[in-house]
Image (cartoon, rainbow, N blue to C red; front, side, top):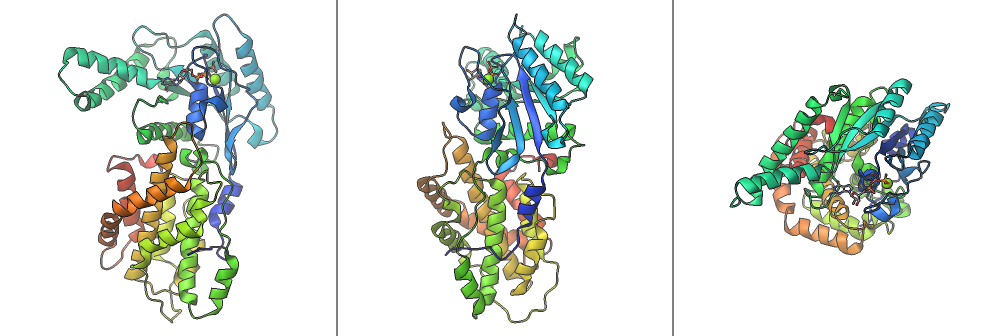
Length: 459
Ligand SMILES: Nc1nc2c(ncn2[C@@H]2O[C@H](COP(=O)(O)OP(=O)(O)OP(=O)(O)O)[C@@H](O)[C@H]2O)c(=O)[nH]1
Ligand SMILES: [Mg+2]
């Protein structure tokens, strides 16, 4: 079954189009991991960002890293500072000053990520280039976020220390202790440092090494970097800050195409069902729009994928009713609205609601069955996308979606989580729906984080 949302306006699209741009420059010593971070954020291969092993990379500071349909978030990678040479620093300085003169806000530099290798025993913290940068940024009043890279090295150091103390202990037992010790060691090191007051600057730690944490864990680190950066950019419309998930995906905006089919349906007695399906399609398209998958073959808007998704909710479809006496405020409608912030995606809260309101209420009785149907659909859809996203994230080099990956993800979901999730949705919504959007949002959040704490700021 092909789903078309064409006649329902997307508020997300408007929001995306109106989003301001955020331009960030990555600077730091050669080899600290700037280009690797760019690769990790945009899910592109290390060759594409010029990561070099054991020698200086070659970054063009003027190159804009962005995603095709998400041009809001722009990174500039710079060539790292090298001891004894001021050339790269001069390039960085000239770039910062040139951006400063730009008339249009979108062309200016909004923040700098100063990448420093996470300090370990005996290592240095700030080199000359870093100090020059901090001074210049302060003079020009550009926010600096310190990004401690290669955090996995500090973790490994602490892990080895623990292992030496007790060789019999398993990885699972030592890992959380090593995590705590590494975090404490970093904080301690920053406190001790006298040349610069790290309490006055925002910082986050990252690791792009594939051996440290799983894809989800690494993504969490990027979320933290987002949160810290957003806080610094309070004045630059931080509410519209794009998420990493959105920035990482590259694809053209996908539009469902079977308009004629649905226009025909609109004329006949299945109209009510049409409205429901159309509404589901709009939810799908808007969610896809903010996820921005690298899906050149349009697998996620294909008839085949639509049919499979529809199979999940078929048993929950409400019976159409004839009355049109519906309230203008919808419970289920806000389910959809709540999902987007839960995913940490873009979207100013509420903008999505309007487009769903009319659709959801034009043919269906406000009540239990519709709430369940929308709840199941949104939860399934979101979790499947989440699994797909993680699957694309761990692939090296990153590749676009393939039919095999999509099929496998759907199959795993169907055989694994689906019935448990459906029961959970029914349980969350309860007999008399009250705030179903909040409960569904909680459910999705729980599933995505595995029940771990999730700082609301990440959302
Ligand atoms: N273990 C580990 N290695 C990393 C990490 N990030 C980068 N590396 C490695 O460090 C080396 C240098 O990484 P780059 O990303 O090229 O460093 P850069 O800051 O861009 O360096 P320049 O381009 O010379 O300024 C490469 O071998 C990376 O694979 C990390 O988080 N963990
Ligand atoms: Mg580089």
